[in-house]
Length: 374
Image (cartoon, one colour):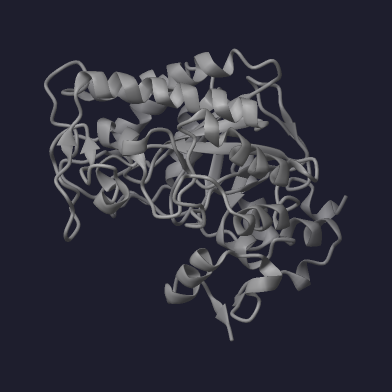
């Protein structure tokens, strides 16, 4: 072991499932846009995951939709039918081939689903309130039966993840998607049991957790369940940090394995109150971290970046862009070759990095999002 980075390279055991990972690095879920139109994976996407199966102790896939009206991207994989289990198994096997643990992220896009990807061209959400973005479609308010059907669908997707050989699922409750939409006072204006005050707006995400946990309990092997959350929203009315601390308190009683706090910059303060400079993940960890382990994410590149986070008491660090640029980041840390870690995306290295063309085009075209080496 490289003694300079003993925290990175130390094992961690998730408290509920008792699953152990060999190190504290998590591969963050990154949309690849590289599946087939029928929701199956492609050879290019499988190769991408296989190339990164030594990059972290816990590897989280791009999000998979749990039901057709929840599809959120072109080229997204699905987990909504049993026919997709063999496709999901290809991804699980690629990620687990080096002995690390694989997690399927499960998802519903809600009002963020593009109409052209939906069977009837109409997105759905908690209420008929469009997102605050140019050209956003006004979603149709979900019926009671659609809500119940979607809750069941998250549980069924979990069953399929178990059958496909995954070690766990991550419930995507972040990044403005459906679970966050039900929790948000901006997108949820309902007056029934699924909306209204803060407690009622928590009903749907907590019901999804319960559905997933019931399915996970039927696994014949240890199986972990995590939850991804965005701490705040810019909209008014929108989710505040006070709202989120109430939600994470409720989640801490649900026997989850971890809470993944989704922010662009781990150390950034509030997006709603510039006077509040405390890192959002640290506030959440202070509230529930003694019960519910927190994964920190946002802007990490070097081993020193990760060790700085571990020094706060947060036990796990997720990396996304860095593992796109250098799939062998963790190996270089282990071998004391950190000076060889790539911190720029080589524009001539698509084939070597095994990055599928739809994802590659997005990376290269999004100027400023990735540091490029030409």
